[in-house]
Amino acid sequence: MTTLTPASASTTLDSINPATGEVVGTVPLTPIAEIPAIVARARAAAKDWAALTPAQRADILRPAGQALMDRSEKLGRLLSREQGKPFKDGIGEVQGCGHRLSDEVDEIAAAVQPQVLTGEGVESTIHHDPYGVCAAITPWNFPMLMPHWMALPALVTGNTVILKPSEETPLIAQAYADVLSEFLPVGVLQVVHGREQGPALVHADVDLIAFTGSKATGQAIMRAAADGLKRVILELGSKDPLLVLEGADLDKAAEFAARNSFRNCGQVCVSTERIYVDRRLHAEFIAKLVEQAAAFTVGPCDDESAVIGPMIHAKQKAHVTAQIADAVSKGAKVVFGNQPRDGNFITPTVLDGVTHAMDIMTTETFGPVACVMAVDSSDEAVELANDSEYGLGAAVYGEESLARSAARRLTAGMIGVNRGIGGAPGMPWVGARQSGIGYHAGPMGHRQFCQVRVVSRNA
Ligand code: NAD
Image 1 (cartoon, protein in one colour):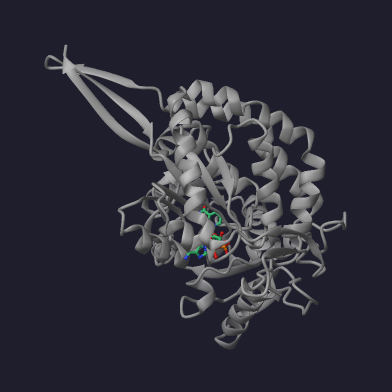
Image 2: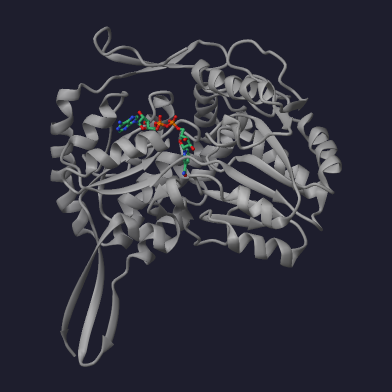
């Protein structure tokens, strides 16, 4: 099933419910030839928008938070029908964007206040100025949260934004942009729809490309951006490890392993994709993981008993089932799941006895599979965890000092010790190695949407 209507055949893009194959709605495909004019409109709007202070821009956007909250039920159901996750998760995603928006715009504005430093007879001011026009290109797995994470800091820091959402989930991204646009001047936030429209936007006269998506697309964007040395923020895929070491609370580790392998049907950039368990804990951990896995019932978004929905499309399901088949052919054992399901549905699966000779331990899966490998020491666990081109998140469960020591040796950008990733407020969202370039969130992340300028004078 594909949602992309060939441009030659149609001027519209259908959004398909991945559980039923039904058309949820339709948006106009943006004609490629119109993209330069859209960028020119954004550039024209950028002058007045950049002239406001960050606090003024924060105030303009602030009411959008309540507007999202007021409409969260309706928007959440649309999100779920388009992306597949249960209604409560779709509504939760909308509320996740709305309820902290007012605080977020203040945090972003505070992060880009000028900073004054004086020394050796010179006073210097560091300014964080907008780049100009930001292309925000986003994936389908969190189809409102991803546009929110990219567009909001770009806007409050003074850029105008052209959002190019995934062609799998255009409706909810458009709805999000429509809510923000109720409060914004014309041209400050525009939306471009379609697949080929992504590369066309990257080639157009934009200053910054804020991208979240796959590694392959990130590489294509970086190559294309090289021409004009356009700034890029790339948040890419991963193959996150979980280490279960001596002294681990196995109930908590198994609960985390199941939740983080299966939530959103495994379609999360920081899903647990590889699990390395101390051999002495292995049997007990597997038993607890299987027990937890049974709770992840599968169904369409309007099935209240379902914890997870379908995969986004048939291609993604085929990728996951091929990885499982490859692993089984090389000696992995299915200890839970892997029963055939119709359509885009797939059963959460636990594999034991996996190795790094299997594709499922090296290439991003992005599906509900927990892959377990027994190890003889924490050193071996760290070595295997670091044997990956990726490095977004990681988690370590174990006796506190052993777990902390392992965490410091992991090459990921965000690491949880006896918990998942995600730190105190203000922490950046950051990937190491081939999981990204640059980062966002927190004061450090918000400043990535800005050109730094230093103005010095004699003190
Ligand atoms: P994708 O790379 O296929 O598509 C993402 C977006 O890029 C879409 O809007 C698409 O139309 C556009 N695009 C495709 N080719 C393009 C090109 N050549 N130039 C410009 N734009 C182009 O990714 P996806 O399948 O939508 O999302 C899944 C991926 O996203 C996974 O790899 C996941 O790990 C990653 N992801 C990462 C994070 C993070 O924070 N690091 C968060 C969510 C998802």
